[in-house]
Image 1 (spheres, rainbow, N blue to C red):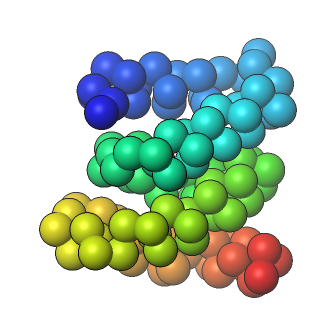
Image 2 (image 1 turned 180 degrees about the horizontal axis):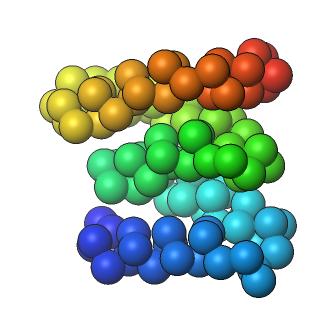
Image 3 (image 1 turned 90 degrees about the vertical axis):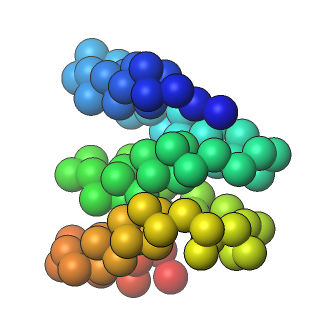
Length: 104
């Protein structure tokens, strides 16, 4: 499971303007693959936050990563109220709604 320090390191990596987007997208894919192996609420929360990223490429990667994870852990979702409340937030954002339709 990820610690708060690990999540902060991921956020710093993703916010660093020197690091190429391809490397950042690879981190998002690695998070998704790791989540397919093991449930981690902090990593899911990070993906949810990335869905609202201003960087469209990172946002799309995070959006596409979520459905298989949400489907796999549908029985655990209600056990994590912080994730349930967080997952409702992106839909309030106009940009998120446009992005989700672009992916679909």
